[in-house]
Length: 252
Ligand code: NDP
Ligand code: 8X3
Image 1: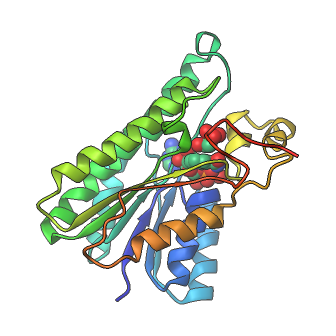
Image 2: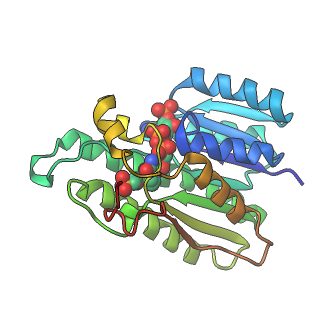
């Protein structure tokens, strides 16, 4: 039976690929993000290609009141949310902690940690009531291995892992599943965002290595979401073949 899948940060990269993977699987989508024009384009394309229902909502996950309003609208519009993919996130800067921009640090915390918990706090009660659901949180290898210039980003992704683990414990008496997906290097707009639009510097991150693509992560998410009712994949770490830890990368 077709499920309703809510994806945050579905306008680009991994979130967009995840939304397409579920659409191709003939699940219905609720796609969210700040760039509404991109959401509209994706909705039109997905509906035409796959004939599934796609709702879109502009939602900035850092805005607590906006998240409450939008999630209420979503829950009123669809029968239920079967899967919530908390993907919206970013890194800003790659500087030593003591030289980093405080506003960048706060934006990372607001988006990657507070945004995730605002959305989850709104959607999870409906899953508890229906006694089923799956929360899939996009963490990172940075949440396992800290690396130079990324203390705050790594801390936010480590928080994602522990929020997942805590929520899994708090919902243990239900049929709700909670998964953390921890990707390594994935070639998306991530580095462009990190370097505040510096495309040349961003391109260098992916030089000399066959990085993961957003679709690789999307297929892993779909695999996790398509397990039988009694199978809960708690964590999945996916790296490029030439990557051994978050920061140990072999480049040709
Ligand atoms: P992209 O920059 O391509 O995509 C980021 C997405 O997050 C966009 O859709 C963006 O949408 C959304 N987003 C950012 N801030 C907000 C916000 N305040 N409110 C709502 N949506 C927001 O990067 P990726 O696809 O690579 O990143 C997706 C996730 O994957 C992130 O959580 C990232 O940390 C994680 N990740 C990425 C890896 C990589 O190497 N690329 C590896 C491991 C994890 P919009 O701008 O429209 O709001
Ligand atoms: C993004 C991957 O290694 O740049 O989470 O931190 S990395």
